[in-house]
Length: 113
Image (cartoon, rainbow, N blue to C red; front, side):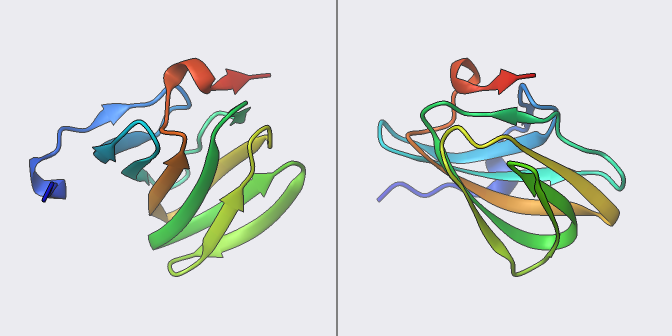
């Protein structure tokens, strides 16, 4: 069994500007917790190959996916297909979310305007 704990995983800043702690990274998928401070946003970007699912676990904000913006809160899960432009701006309480990626997250698969 492979067990990871958020308290033991070192955080790093991704290419889009969010701080993440990657819990698992295999050839097929990855799972990370991302956090944004109040008012902080990711840089609008897309992934050519990677499908993502965001699960908000605390706070919230406004998430834009391919031109459609919605307010998201803890408990919301959002599917972000490969090639979809997206950006998350945290609300007053910041945002914490789990990011599931298949294939796994890669800086090389992150593209900006």
